[in-house]
Image 1 (tube, rainbow, N blue to C red):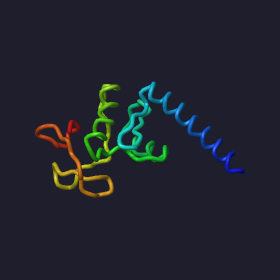
Image 2: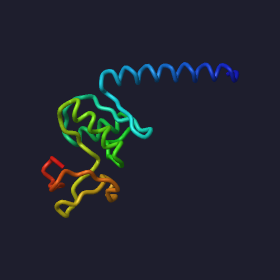
Image 3: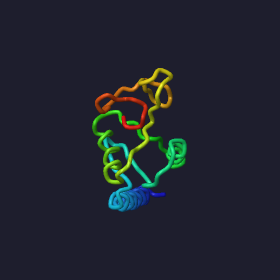
Length: 121
């Protein structure tokens, strides 16, 4: 393709993506933080199904790494009035948590007397 045609195609794709993101935002299905897009389908599922759906969508289950990302996840929790699974699991040591890949947490924002492993961290 000629250089100008590539530019036109890129402009058209950027426009379509922008419109799709707008629709998803209106429907409270996506939010953004630090260049990352956080998304939900708004449906309840168990942890393993959630991890799988995230992989199918080309992403991963949300793991907040800073206050902005934590707020992006909290946006869905508040809007849907429910909890959210995170890409964090309890280690063999009760009360100690790490990322799903085993790496240590670099950011936490636990409630007082948490984490307890009882689902209200």
